[in-house]
Image (cartoon, rainbow, N blue to C red):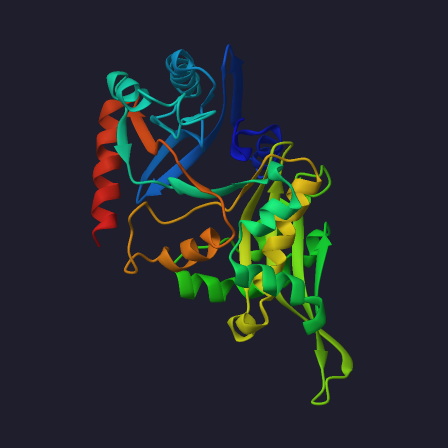
Length: 326
């Protein structure tokens, strides 16, 4: 199964932004490449990037996929290629790192997470809930009694309900998140085709006597990507002042259960700290949070680059390293 960022839906979104894309399908492989321009001072450097791609279902398919990807980049006039190959299983990926090195690729710092946490949702609702931490099950079951309602929306105009919660996540977890304008464009592309959905945890406020006031507040939100096989929890925001309500937990439990109900195989929490990382890692906290829902780690092959125009790439690489050390 190819990652969502290798899908036709993602290609359409990139094209709606004016990006140049290239897609190819071969025997046991496929890829979506997005041409990007990196700017360092007066230098403009074009690269062809396959986010979580090429996809391949047989170990022998990786080489022809990479060769075709490089050929496309050469035809487009790009300076280098960046890939994040993804096999259909870890078994398929055995030997892939050695193959990449033999073809002239080298590892670089990752742009997308190299590790993720996912849940196989085909086991049924009871088993899914049993696999979660006891406190998560409790918060999910008590949510309604606390005045928390989980809603969904496919209206791009609701995106600000998410983005105004996201700054708290950026500050707390040390991650860089997308802005409102970008996410509204993303939603406008993905929502109409059923490839995206916005989840909202809404608190119905009560007075000191516990009576409903008629006021409501969105205290957690998640923008998920959807394909036939997987639900990806991509953009999340939560109001830290309401953590004790368990609203964010209840919402994410509902996302997992919906994925199962709709016939998907996986629910992907998109990103986690590397295996063995301790409390000093900036992603440690939200990794523990994701793991509390049950599931398993999936480790990817990482990010690799190969220069096409050697001299230009050397200058680009030097500029990138200088800026990174400032």
